[in-house]
Length: 323
Length: 182
Image (cartoon, rainbow over all chains, first blue to last red):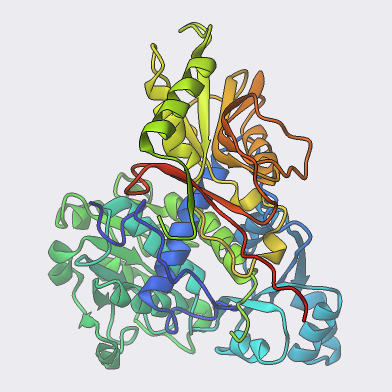
């Protein structure tokens, strides 16, 4: 019998009753399992020659991106198209926001055009939560500042579950810029709820000791952590979110924390390496590691599409009366 | 079986119906032009497996989940849980027999045909059902039928098959009588 969180096990009976996906902090393990199991079903569609199903025919999905993104926006657009929804991109830099219109008024105008789902990326933590209180469309958080990136967290969970057959009991290290990373927060909530041990590793300026309160171990020396890890998620240095230098130099950071072949050899033979991208080759990991047999970076991209199809499908459902 | 259910076929009779259906499906088939069975989830799948087990040459069985092709998804009270489509053979040019337990309005079969045609272009699709209970809303007719059952529109028909169910039988659940206006 497969473990409860393994692919192919029965879908969680609680399934999904939420209108929005705002973060993983709020979600239960059962709700996340419902998304992952639905995503497994959608994976099959991406392997077909005709990669399209009519499930969201007639629905309109707006991508509201107030921050640059290529990967996530493209992934959401493609996911919506595969479900036959109409999609429209909204780019903040060429909008009436530059004429003084508020964020909420912009969203209300978009909703007046018949929008059903808004996929929102915003530099301010909590912006999607705020929007969910002012519009009737479903809101999907596609990254809010350094707060959460729930679909990235879910696709990382899916990639680990597929590669390892389970999540519970694994030791997963998040390596690098934890302090500024929304991916780290979504990963922490998701992994802990699935029963993984989470180690946060990086320079002290990027891994505050206070994060131990979340239930994680904090470590500053990668060499101490490596032999224990089943999975290492290599996070990008968020230069754009740092006020000043959080470490002496990129060269020094690489010397202590870059995943190299030599470091991979010190880890378990079946180590799985994830990286949310965009990756900085030669800073967070070497090209040999990024393209090596332990790397699941491109699997993450593929699984991301399935996860976003699943989330769009689930939030578009009708809620039972009273919910 | 609950007290409201009327048993139309017991396990032995249900098994005999399936055997007779298999005879008709595999009649004239050869290993060089195999028939491919595709069961509609959920009870069409064990039925297709039983039909395949009766074939001399054996045969791969696929499963189709019609959820994403339903024409009433917008009206669904809650989005249905997906169980996935798994077709382990090439649909292009195949002689496909779509298998389901009960044929009623025809809307499920319409959705299943759409789902299969999104996977490729079969040479032919035929339909085999264990029970045809009538009341079609679309111009869809089965090629192979186990049992033609006369029902009222609001009756329900349940097929129970192993391994999904603990027993095998076909039951009809009559619609509750309407209260006459006072």
